[in-house]
Length: 236
Image (tube, rainbow, N blue to C red; front, side, top):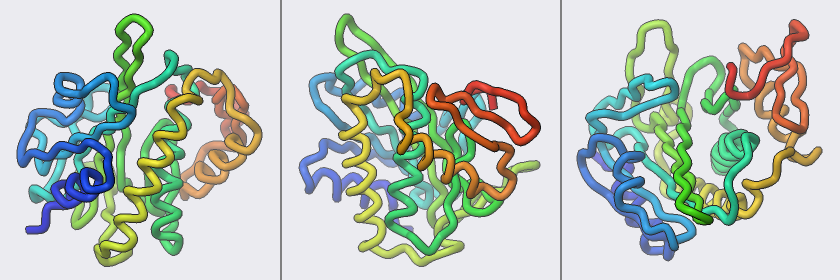
């Protein structure tokens, strides 16, 4: 079977972005935290299968058919410690790269950091930060169903190939846009607020989710729900 992850690693490496691939690992986030080079602005780790893949709140990330799911960690060097709104910007960066590469697919951002197509979960994002003195590093775990998707009780899932064939042109565009988005975000991570343009773009992405409970978004990342409640981004 085609290895999505090997293909991604080879393309990034050929375009000057340090990238690593292995068939099986416990967790790409754990691997990246052990092996990354703190002086490199962006470094990426891929695996076809994780034996201990994690989602938010210690949930397990399940991959089906080795090589058919994107399993990656993007190691990003920061100039300053990240503010809470950094996670919102990361999620939108992934959404933007997907929507730009496959404009006919109705991607949506679901707080705190899942990517959906209609009512099916496509991808999940897990961020972790390590600080060593004045050096700060963010590890962005990105798992995405590409060729197929796992069957999970009480959670509808979907895959990219339910909506499009796997084509090199679109996939290379996605990798190019995402890596560019993340590198451009690095110096912005210390900003405590979203600017008005960022806020509106993120709100638009949130409202594309068919079960969207969000009415508005404040510049500090607070969500205003349809029933009037206020929630911090990571409380959903």
